[in-house]
Image (cartoon, rainbow, N blue to C red; front, side, top):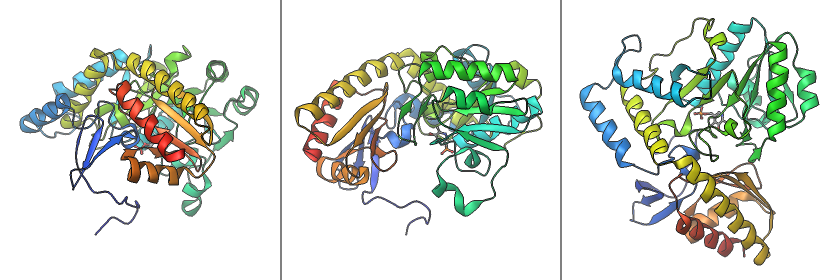
Length: 378
Ligand SMILES: *Cc1c(COP(=O)(O)O)cnc(C)c1O
């Protein structure tokens, strides 16, 4: 028996520890996908497990209108570590929901309608966020989606300036496009986006659902550009695998967010997991570690591709958000890596092998991945 939406893989996973997953036969797999960046500390991290266990015994759930210390701590931690000024925190349960909230808050605060998004963007799959997602295949069967969305070329400053006007509520950008193939934005592009949105009175929204929580070598990817958006959305790795999304907003948007809500917002158990995750990421300096080990992994991959004359077009990315563009179908490479080498990774489009390993990996793990990659493609 299996679900009917996801196509399942031929490996049944029983347990996980650090960067490894174990199947029902006890076979270990090195997990360089981290289930789409959802486990930055690796699987079943003891600090998160303990926090969840304790909180579940104390109070599993209470509605969001009763303050509880564990949720207050999440608000405070996120407000403290957020880019300057984004200290108003909305909690929810997923990435797409964080973006839905951002769309609603931006429209409410600006009174404007248009939302500008970029080609190749991925912002989620609910009817609002899906309207900001580029790929036709994800959208066509479900139309009509939320209206008022205009797409521009990612990285084109002039196209963005031309699209943003007085009726623009928001511009949505991924600082590094993930699903679209791992494309980092130029620092100048993010700065230009800051300028045109400020001039038009539109909200600049950075979708850091995949890039956030240390993934790209800083806690938030926008830090690299020194650009602070009006809204930052995050999810995936924030509670090391428990479902949480967050929308962090500037005061001028928090003043008039409209009427919004979500029953499970800031549930105590997920907040406990998020607190333990953020504390560990920061205490162990994992963003800086991700920058260092990411540089190492990318340069080792490029060197191996060169030395062994592998069918690789490009290795790109930031920190531990890495895309390897291969001159063949990414899915076949991924299958061979899993079956022959017991190494797991992800696709990002047809020809890109995407790596989003736990931020805790070391050089030995990186070397093992590179060796496996050479075996499969050599
Ligand atoms: C995964 C992702 C989303 C959607 O998050 P869900 O939790 O799957 O709803 C949105 N934006 C980006 C950039 C993502 O990577």
